[in-house]
Image 1 (spheres, rainbow, N blue to C red):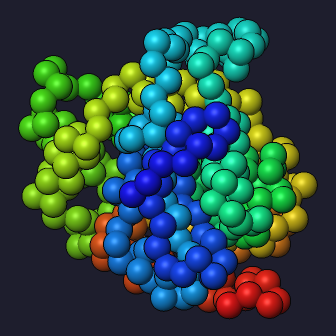
Image 2 (image 1 turned 45 degrees about the vertical axis):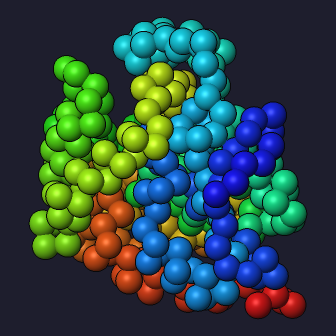
Length: 303
């Protein structure tokens, strides 16, 4: 792994494959570190002829932490938006800023463009990359994410509670317990879900690598306060593949369908038994959708 400065922050990243291949940037979701990307997905993409770059979003992992900046509470953000207050001006940063980070990373690593794929919050970020930095986005793959339309059906109460749960004591074991419980609520069908002992081990390893509860709070504030972008999606002119799980209770399939409906020419695949996770069993299914899509959109003169 390495660090590089982009958009005024130090971004921790790792890359795989040949530098001569077209770049593919993977953007992780809320509170998640680059280590959460499955090796099998990365390997499948490099085998398909992509230079794969993964990185820690701002405030998470080993990328710059925005210390000393306290966001309003989620309740205050929601109440402020309902009252017409400019809450986007009252948070430390927005998803727009995180999209600018990712676009700057592409340039800093010497590429003009990249295929960009993002999961959950990362899927929101890649949409904003395509809208705000279209010169950096060759293809767009939003995964288990939303168009931002506030009229879409929300997460189930159980999924929201699992996502925002805070342990009584912040220990590795307590964090691991919450990870297992959360995955049971919004993860994939038990037939293909990651085993509990693996979920637990991954959660402990992530906490040992980096533990930034205030960074998580600032990211959540960025999601809530981000000005909605759904009506802008009709202006996009980029090959787009939307991927979503039929069992996702955190961001319902209707949200992915809304992206596909709004982006001109977008394709969508709803995957059976898949929830809001990156279980190993789903990776071959995803690659079977992603690799042909990339093959159709590789620019002339590139491998």
